Length: 602
Image (cartoon, rainbow, N blue to C red; front, side, top):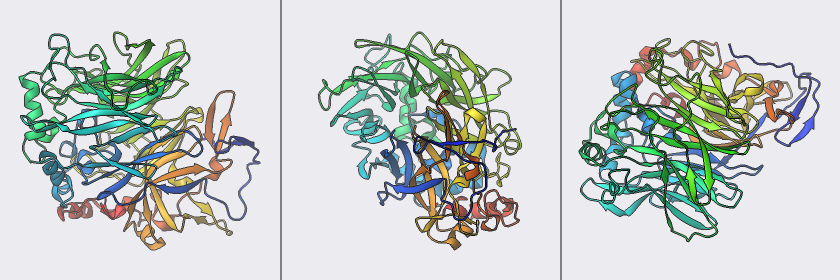
């Protein structure tokens, strides 16, 4: 059972970094929301978006968002910002492996902007993604930013239209790093071991996911790039991906076509030239691959941290203990990184998180796992997708573990396992250096069977490691009026926080939300517009223990959505969680995306 403690005698403000004393009494009169909402990166650059992507540090941070031409993410069963063909881990299973086929068909071609048209435009290449950082846009042929700093610089990828392989209908994908007014091109090594020229003709594949600034001014960049032999099996998967058929649950599942490996790049913004190409250095091998050369094996570095005097990378690597063909599984990994001059070392192998069982072991408990983030205190945020079904669902759970300055790894715990009901999902997105986690979970009112059924609605959460407290973020965006009644409007409109993606050390959260223009639409969950929002904490929202370097929520600032407003936490028969399976199937068979009931446009 998830614990939460509302009895703190005093509160400190993370938002302002000041000590504030509270007596624990109820708030009198009108009260501001715990988090104030500001929309960022607005505009209409494509049909879907803006979806929150990345947040910098600082009290006035920069934010990155993405727009898409199509809704392919509902079919792929992930949050919109997670679209990344190169991370096959995100598509280990898609809709047709999990839900009712009629539901999946509605996601495939229920509208002319859904996944079927996405696949068509992928084969007859049309740029899909537009990136927006601090209201400045760029399409995928220039730069899609996946992580940024306080100046709006950062890393990501681009599709290089000047490098085209006609044989497989492929435009080269390259990582990019943009710092000091310069853009650096990040590429994969040409080949590996006995095949050093492997990708000379085909072009290769690379994406930068994260970075850390070194003391000497250089920047260490992490991500993934194409790896291994270029052989007949690889050629086959490349053809399936980029020149294959246009059918549901078919050739697109082989994408990116390449095998990929965790990769590092060392960038020197001061001394390198604008446009300079940097060849990455890859891990020596996967954590556990003895065969399956035909498989689309994958590995990546997702985050960095400075733990004590060590640079630590976190992510995942491939194992063939579980899965085969296009679906070998992934398992969580930690690498100790050393940088000596221009030489980077990732060690002989990565370290596994104790208790986060490798897929294929322990009676196939897990489908796949990965480390999503790591803090400078060595607190590890991981996620697992379970193989075993619970309550007609194979749940996703976020986990917490540790890696200390003495190289000791602590066993993982799963704070929201079976909370608030058996088989509930929860996915962690980010953790800051005060050990505060944000992510999303199942709407507590939505307990529908998932296996061969329909997917559940999601809602943002905030979890504080120090007191093991799991809370719903929407319960912290309402204030109170003079009658001490909930007032959930901000900026003259109403919001529902669905996918928090980042939290910085100032306690500011970046999230994808849905905006309702008036109270009636909000009450009925209709006519919603996706927006990227920053949530800034009011004074007294967080309690900081400076000695321990941790923060917890002041739960006296919690204001639940009123039941009469069809709250996600409502017990009312009018709650969205009470919609029958029959009506959900009618929606699906009517070629509407199920999420339309709440999200309007979708």
